[in-house]
Image (cartoon, rainbow, N blue to C red; front, side, top):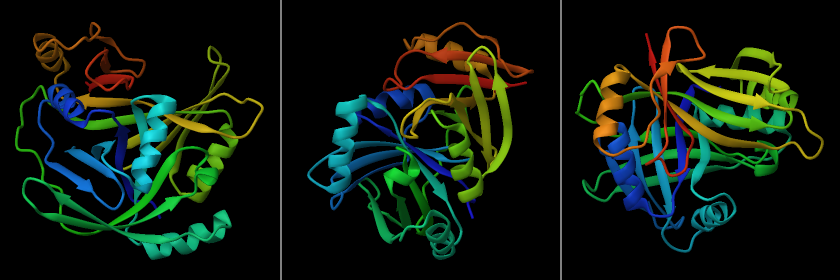
Length: 279
């Protein structure tokens, strides 16, 4: 039912500043900057090999704009949402409505690029927050238009999203939702002694949802936390970022064998951000 992670949303206060910062980190500019007047939001999209990042900010009065505003008041700038792509949203609606025991609604969406004036169309389902366990989650099927790719192929650029990190107080419930309900493959379920909890990997389109599950009493709740990005040459990326004034740690061996990593400490809208090269 789920084809891929379509995009990750990061909520920001100042879209222009966030665009400037992330363009510096990624090594290229967004290929789409638009607005959603009926929703009260504006955005900028950065395309990668396996998904895209959406920076989103409140622009005016509107249901999503108000929601973004409340999120920023509570959490500050941070990872806001997860969009999962499906090839058949009607079928997804039928399956999920049955398994989640809720009536889901398909909505039409349109995005207008402020520069090219081109449009993109899609259909989406917003999963109710009480079912998505606190994570703003969309199912999306693109129906018209395309997101332009960036043309800069510099070796120091960020190329892919490696994984998104999610925290959960109910790992068993998380598996039930993401694996059994959404149908995303559970690739790892491992207890980590030093955390006193479990590490879960849900994999699709060469991208991972990495969950840190520590069982706690209370209402089941999940939260998106950090992002990890892949580069083909971490030494060149590291140098480019240092030269540009970005705060970044020294390169070291990653936890996963045959990887090199560094943590980016600035220019990421307060989102914990890891840079990875797979050797």
